[in-house]
Image (cartoon, rainbow, N blue to C red; front, side, top):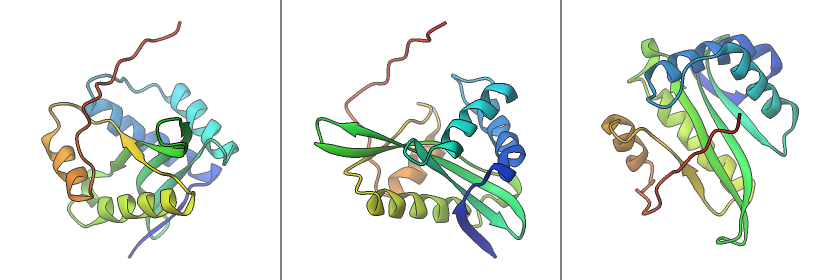
Length: 149
């Protein structure tokens, strides 16, 4: 039985393991456990920054999604950025991702968010199909990024 709840500091090792899987398959990122621990800690330490939802199969974390809060002047209020959604390969195809995305949408609604934005690799047709099924649509905006040393 899969349960979705908020991550805790005790989940940090499992979350880092999941991010290693995710960043190993994404084009723009490389796993770096120290960086991932710092980033996850910033979210876990401040609920105004965001929340990390986890999927648990018993006591094992098998999936996660980060939900970060910001303000949109276009929307005139709070919005959410959905990041780092990943399900362990041995739990894919069992509805775990669907439960996570439904919980993320519910949390955005409960938090008064007007929009959820996410990024996915351009060539990741499976992810785009998955998010499309959940009501996400391609934006005319293109992401641009500058790394600050």
